[in-house]
Length: 432
Image 1 (spheres, rainbow, N blue to C red):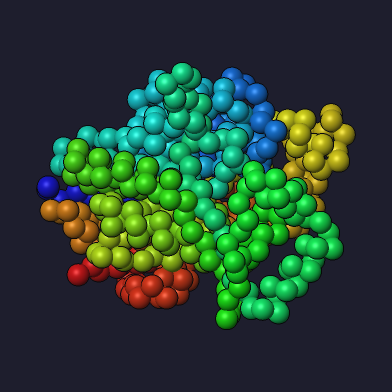
Image 2 (cartoon, rainbow, N blue to C red):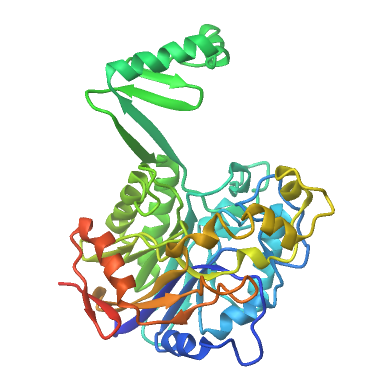
């Protein structure tokens, strides 16, 4: 394998067309991206013209953009995309399939959604002059209605996303274990489950394990939280990684994951760390994480980079064109409310939410080189999305060279033993 260069960005929540020639600062971002052979971004949108019905549940904002915004994404030079995320199913199966159609019309290479589970799980392949690159797209952040379904001997599958489910177990000492049991007895929260056990339809939980509704508590000597990836999903994804390794020179895994166990959104959940490392063990070369809309640390595991989150690349959530009935109903607003007024209400006139969280509005573009199957160097380019700008202008990336962003990311990466050198506004991670 010849030396191949890669660059990856985080979430692209794009809702506005670019002006002719690009916005101010566009050229520098584009030129940086275009220097690389493989250029990745996560598409956290559906792209269609009302070709799907609004789902009963959304990823937060019902995300639909003019399909022509895909042309704006291509203008950066990107040639590889993930489509699996918590917004994939915002407009039901029709929105999933229409987005796929609009991507294919533009010859955009993507993975993560499909007409059935096999299609959504399958790697996509990017042909470059130096290497054949495979990518698998997956998400752990989704409503269960958005999962793609497999085909049986009798029925077709279901359009949707490639899921990574997980289980959370709350380990507690005897004192808290007894409190949970007492509260369950008081509220009868387990009555239906207990009747099913009594009638033989369900097995009782193992000794030392107590179910409080859908939550699982385990008796332990200390209090801690454990999260575990679903084995069925892991086996499917690992199988796709091994297949991709037979067919490509490089295997990437893109994972959209909001979750944290500790309440600190900068810290990935335990199941995500387990997932990423198992993907590497199965043959993945790089794990590209995104989802929480902010940076998370970088780990080098067995010589393979794991980017737990690259934060935002484009974040135009407040300038989405339309929102459905359900959005206004959830906020107890009149059904003739317009989007601008809805966003004012949701953000309490710009005083709460993502708009006032600085870490949402800066990030990095991560670049690296690979040769003979090994990553040799990672380069990190800081970007800003313009937190200080008005709603109609904020959310597009410009390069900054801000070393404070790199210092912040270095702190997040330190617990993984990852050292970063900062020089002339770029972060460098050297791999052995």
